[in-house]
Length: 83
Image (cartoon, rainbow, N blue to C red; front, side, top):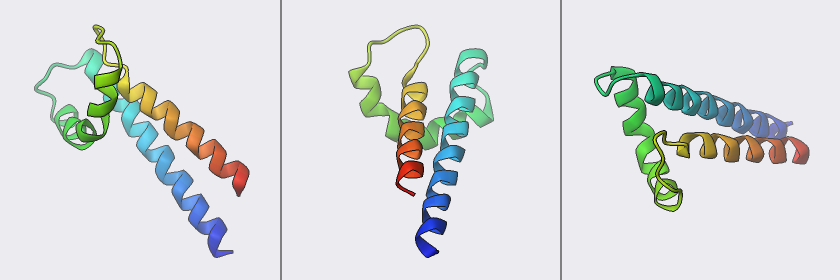
């Protein structure tokens, strides 16, 4: 019983992080640099996204949040199958 609760909590956490990453990606595309929400999300996610940005080619739009969101969802699917 405890293990299923832990897996459920981890999957919920991955879903919340994915949602925040997609908001971050959307705000990067449409917002100016003075947005407070974008600034907070940038401070939270930049340390995690920086290694990914070094590997990905630089385009007009930073797709590293989408790549990380996809990786998190793949991890969530794997956890669901293990559960």
